[in-house]
Image (tube, rainbow, N blue to C red):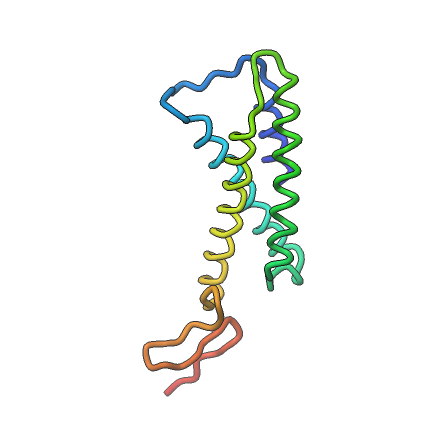
Length: 139
């Protein structure tokens, strides 16, 4: 996660950085993907390193999103001070939405890997509840 943050700030501080492809709003898509990946990596790292983050409720999700917005706000502020770069509220919005999408995607994929849906244990075809800790018994 630290290396990815360093990459974000390295790219943000490059003066006159130009993308190889240009189409309308390409930079908003780049911001969305960049911060989506950051959200995904952040939540994944927290879930692996801190057991209490495995059960993710709305308060923790909002706390993470607020942290991501703070990083994005600093990134945009920093970009506005680099020659040939500019910061904008639209970029900040794309960063925030991307971070939230990354959190959502990591949460969705991790609950599926654990055998749970986003709202609880997944039921088998026979209607049996199966969660992450359930073991299959031979018939």
